[in-house]
Image (cartoon, protein in one colour):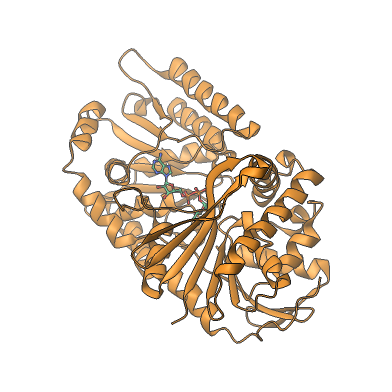
Length: 468
Ligand code: ADQ
């Protein structure tokens, strides 16, 4: 079996006790790497002055090598905070209004991808498989090809691929699109994303379909398919079951004092629709006065990307909004929204999902959304909670038995909350069983194996040359 090399912006390195950070993606990739022997390369998270970038930091855990590179302060500003998070992220989430395109950031993005390629190059052996992850590293394969790499290289996009009119508003869309053709296999979260990508190729007039899931552009032929990412379904279900025994669980139950728990868990990000969700919850409370004092919304929202101005502004906006609703609707002995800005450990999170009667997963746009899947896996089959899910999350393609909503429709979402809380137990069980079947059939290990199978066996010609 060929060795696997994974490349991503950040690397989930094991801590000093050897425990890797929890999370389905890290676990699945680590198990694929461990099975084949492998290498994971990415940014260390450290930034340094231009002349202080040292050699790669190498760590070994079992038969996995981790290679970490520092970046310069300018790199982080232009590549990470700049082009990746202020152009590609908003564009792929349909927020043209938030995209701040600058030539300096764009040049920095391509420069850092060239730098990643130069760091990886000396580590590549002839039959290694290379799997690149996410929007930070789109041009990496093209850079590697320029430097003579002929290995099979795959790419998985964790976020949505937008419709052509949105994508083509980005000034460097041609370069981004053509650099993707250097891969052998392109993976998207949903069929919809893959179709958007195919439409972009067609609109640009460069690509041709050459078979099911196969495309030709110039002298390159590659596969582009959807590989919906899953979670560690069985492991997460067991974690949730066990969490019911913990002291946190008991304290939480006590503090709820018989009130129904509604839960929201999201990184603090404008794509997650948190402000629209709080508006919908307020509207639900006002339209259903009987529910007042009977439910509590626990919104767990760790801060993210605080160095990017839109995120900093959002932190203030959501805190103010939650405070305003609590002030307007709450009573001396009832706080409608408990708003928490921190990360929880996975067992604690699993236990809270299990305790909740309803999960609000209402992103305005999301590649997949693993919270939706974790919530379902955590439920108790006798008395499962309801998943209220945005139509614009990739997860909605698979989880059709969730209560699907349009998160822009605040009153419609409020009505769906009322319907979900009143749903009879038989219906909740039927919906849950159907969703659980899907999650078992496509867990994160299947996702990983399917992608790697295509990357290994795909019949495209090995690249013989790369033309700029
Ligand atoms: P994210 O945008 O980060 O991922 P998501 O898929 O929901 O979104 O994953 C978040 C993960 O972080 C989940 O595993 C969740 O449990 C965890 N998490 C969130 N809040 C937490 C908290 N307070 N404490 C502890 N853990 C918390 C990107 C894309 C998604 C895509 C994933 C995977 O934006 O669309 O599903 O990658 O491909």
